[in-house]
Amino acid sequence: MYVARVPNRSSPPAYLLREGYRENGKVKTRTLANLSHWPLAKIERLRRVLRDEALSVPEQEMTMLRRLPHGHVAAALGSARKTGLDRLLAGGQAPPHMVALVLAMIIARVIDPASKLATARQLDAATATCSLGALLGLTTVSEQDLYGALDWLLSRQPHIEQRLARKHLSQGTLVLYALSHQVKYGMASFAQLDHSCSSGSGELDYFVGSEKGFFSWPIATCAICSRRFSIARSMTERS
Image (cartoon, rainbow, N blue to C red; front, side):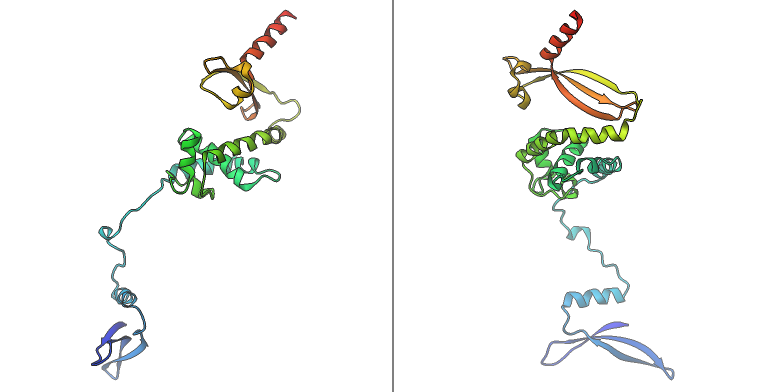
């Protein structure tokens, strides 16, 4: 089977799909289709296929416009979904967009920790540095979107902690409580709400308490102002 080009005197050439066969010891040809209405590029591709030629475009004819790293994103996101983190966030009537933003911030914190502004740029389709935003269906992402998602997550904290407690705690289960001291410099949103936690120089001094199950599964967490913690400890010791 081959493509034959039949010239015409006063008209464009005709392109015919033909095949050869033998009949009574003689070689004959017959026309299977008229390809004259096809674009020339399509006819040439068919001709190359019939000749068993490779159709791959040479690398020098291709231009790499953009590529997004994907392997580490697939590994981190796959692990999060395997543990059920996406289902935990999406419980109840959770907006899918908020769930995607929170999940994206968690994964971004693992693979490439950065500020909220830098993270927004990593997730935005126009400035993405990896495939995370595309995998979660995020297109336009701003810094304010991420802060809005954090506010939404804070409102969902009691519900999430209750679900974790029902999953990992049962009657008689040993519960561990860890307390760590943290000092941050610069203004923080919750420091502005509680001035007793911050000094005049912008230093934020607080404790982070986390409740875990016997196998270190996180159940709940909270931030405690160091000044309030010291007062409470002093009162406990005096009593």
